[in-house]
Length: 262
Image (tube, rainbow, N blue to C red; front, side, top):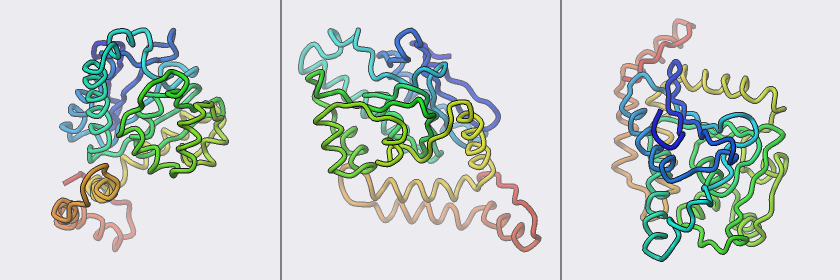
């Protein structure tokens, strides 16, 4: 458990990061923001962790954005805004640049900074109770560059304009239609479905997933062109791995492979 009521733990081969402030619909305060890069670094360094999952405590909210009670401090002037936006960039980079796949399990409110975190994740699944919004225009906030980038990548510029200009809420079905989530489940079935996704991620070859994630992220990064050397290195890590040999042997023997991530 790290400071700021960000629950960080490991269950089997899954690293869990839980926003735990239910009295404020799991709004993310400064300590919680700062805890995310630390948690991701811990999971990245742990060979037992195959994937990372994010959720909010309870079932009322994933995260209803940043904790606005701190805005007088963190957005008091241009300097403070710059520091805060820099922290958000580090949070998103920690999730996006990890070689390990990330999953967002979304109940209820997923707004502002909460939606930013969800969009930084590789996979997103929500319950029928989910509500999505980025209310920057209703609060007079200058939404950050990285947040805009990920939104554009996910829903395209036409939908991004409506989301940002109107600041309106979208239900689960609308979120699915525009691509904010991969699937909508009845709320009572969401956790079990995500457990199945996490089980598959744990079984599949870690280096093959890392290879695909590296290449995809290179093509969607916010500045500069894709780095051919980094992508080639990811391919070579995969093709020269023990797991690659295990996958071939398992296929020929018609058995389930046992991948070790090496």
